Length: 312
Image 1 (cartoon, one colour):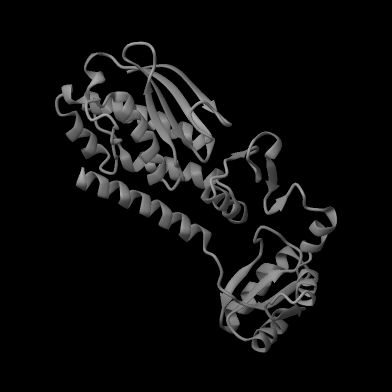
Image 2 (cartoon, rainbow, N blue to C red):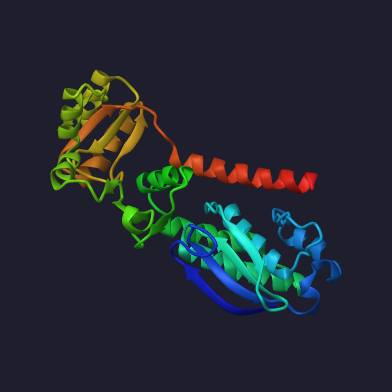
């Protein structure tokens, strides 16, 4: 297997509307049909049991190393919790040469997955073994370090569910939705249409609650507190469980949720007080668990892949 070219597609392209890794692969000899590599399929599934080779539309088309590379790059990302919804292998005009295109949600994670998939293919051909646990650990660690935060990630997932393409513009939370004249951009939970006045308001949690309440929108009971004892008193007033948070912080800094006893409430107050001189105690209302939804989606994808293999 020889990699002739590899590039990152950061926008709409010939293959899809999704950001993708594209490579041109030349297969040599028996690599053009993995059935001709003795013991290859058994070794592959032994090294990576969750891999799901694509069900080719043409039943007479052979599965090449290029197809294996595609599946491995995609499935390694899925196993590591990286959302991926596109991949394809297509033959070029040259004999034994293929385009391999695999989507990614985080560019660096996609690139690492492609490198690990190459290692998996070569190791399986040469029967030298592949450390799947270490590969997934590296991918998960990288993805956790660079992935979008909960608020931005939730917005991106809502866009993906509606078929809206996105592109991360920086290593921070600046994200672009759509392309060309229809594109929109967000920074964390703010859009390119958010006014400076609105931004100033939402940075003050007490003021935001006051304005929402005045507009008839339900808000949790709560008040400002001045010390740990006052925080415990406020918790009794609004009813347990409670949330303790700085009045003017962002991105969840200093926020502690679901506190129900005196020691926990007072300890949470001290955490919030390190972030701001103004601390609020509010009634805790359970909401959307973004990380659990990510895990559930990944598990569902793996289960579907397993069902296909069992019935193929």
